[in-house]
Amino acid sequence: MKNIIVAMSKIYTVGETTFDIIFRNGQPSAAVVGGSVLNTAITLGRLKLPVQFVSRMGNDHVGELSLDFLKKNGVEPEFVIRFDGNSRLALAFMDESNNADYEFYRADESPSLIFPELASNDIVTFGSTNAIKEEGRNNLLLFLNQAHDKDVLTIYDPNIREFGPRQLIETRKKVEENLHLAKVLKGSNQDFMRLYETNNADEIFEIVRPLGVQLLIVTSGVEKVELRTSLLSLTFPVTPVKTVSTIGAGDNFTAGLVYGFYIMNIRTANIQQVDEGTWLEIIQYAADFAAQVCCSESNYISNEYADEILRQ
Image 1 (tube, rainbow, N blue to C red):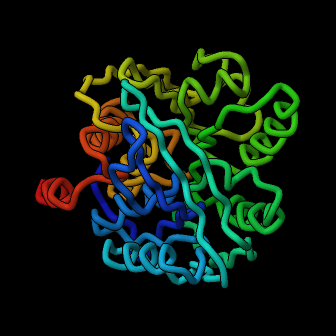
Image 2: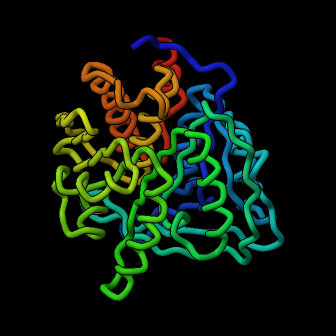
């Protein structure tokens, strides 16, 4: 497939803004602007793509730091809502394997988001807990219905946290409502174990395909990446790296997918026609972005790495 950028096409990323404070051995070691979809947006902004972030943040110091960070990294904040009060915080406690255990501190308020008017060649990515919260859910679903009606390429990463058995029915219900309005589902094997008690890609695709999902991507850490469409069943190996932090790895895998879709002009209309060689190139972007982030305490690819990608 030809590398043609769609004229006037925009990327909309919908999610929460979280200020991450990272702890090692009981002591804070770093603090970064974060949030699952924000991490994706920053990487895309560093790659000079036309990305908008749809979110909210407080009129506090954390909010100012976050907004300034978005602007400095090429992310348009036109649809970022500010409110009087404190922004959302997350404490990330790193274990010996450099995986994070989170504690979240909610923002003081949750005003309704303002959503853009979409064009058919735009790309939308959304996910994590923000996508299944009751607050503002009606507005999110209206926006996703707009995307669905215009055949926008919509990418959903559920990024499911641990939950008790009593929460399973409600969580699955909301996830599947989202899946009815998404074209691409990308999740980890842990996500699908929590949702459906299976990490078998064929079984998962049989569940989500009737809901409208056209492309399923299942990540399994450093083991493999599996891809399923109605025409293809592919498995890609992953090159292990020395991990400093896994925070942002999945978010940047998503960024790699979006980057590949954008520069290769892949949208809903032609996603089923993508050949195996092109998928290999796109998955390589995704895996490389995730690996680059794992090698640092940053939540996004470095500016130097982004420049290297752009030179290529």
